[in-house]
Image (cartoon, one colour):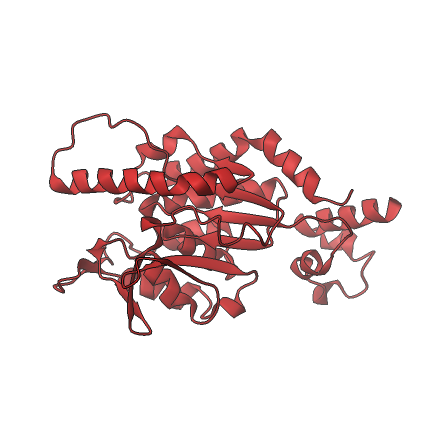
Length: 303
């Protein structure tokens, strides 16, 4: 037990970046990465935890605040699964960017101006912004990421969900984020793919049998509309929301904890207004379930 207390104290020192104290215990601290320590330390009875990041277009910023809160609670993950916006956040996070860094990257990147129109018949927009973002900030392959990542996209030929977890990362994320009719489908190996949210917006299934505990963040709570739908775009978006909510039911039931809040529905999925409030909504939603999460954390530590 004393060894376990010592190891946990050392982890705490790493997290707090208190190098002066940690140097007393490790002769060559500069070469000893705290991240490496947490990854390689496999204590008996330790459970594995999977993080699931739902799709939700620009509501994906909510994930950043949620991740910040989860980090503060000391919850670390072994695998990540993300659809659409969730796949973007997962790719950046596992490429080494903190939640605050990701917020700065997205808010400072001119995202409102870099979504490029196209005159192709398969979509009215193309993913130039996302392509540039991934090229600059995300690692090139799944294998290069710090943890396994699973990215679903819908195969237009078979109408089935294909889950990408190896090979080129950027292509898979773009495919998973190609909202039908709005964005041009992404072609991979001769096959057109569209947004994974069409069939699997809360991708628990790809990792359910690979981890002991699943924490899922759902960005798509279905709430009544507060004002009449005024155009075909709003009607189409509402129909898509209903279909998405229907396809996440089985995945919610397979989750151990689902983080969601009615406030998420107040954020327009296709604008980037109130970005700070989106971040805060994610943070607050996690902290509102703090007690439940801490029980999961306690169960994930050695007995």
